Length: 140
Image (cartoon, rainbow, N blue to C red; front, side, top):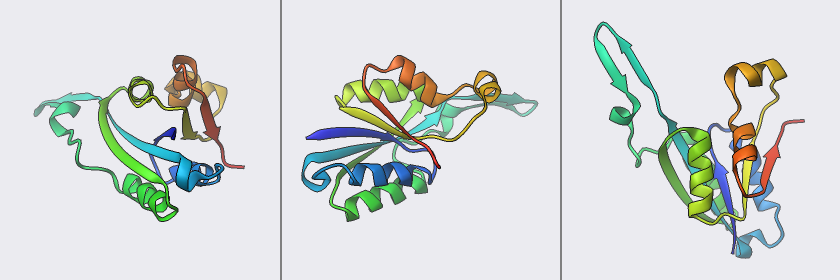
């Protein structure tokens, strides 16, 4: 089987699902691991501290993950959905190694160079840190 790790953050990931289903013989040769990362955070105010680990529930998949899974399953693709907690880049790279993904397919968006510097880029981080091929799908 050809294993694709597909990180899902929004409905833009439906474009990555379309890419996967367009792979040759995808119904019989491709399996997809959908990954949703609940980003780690800590916030404090006069009422106290809220930590992401206190809110994290690995079984509570966001609606867009369920939607992407349904689309892939309707097209005959084997799908596993996972939810992890932590830094998105680190978790994507870790899970890709853990499941021995052949590739990582990510839906991207256009960002200016300044935006990447100020806010970082998960895709850029995955490309730089992963030892796997990364396919980035952008809107035309």
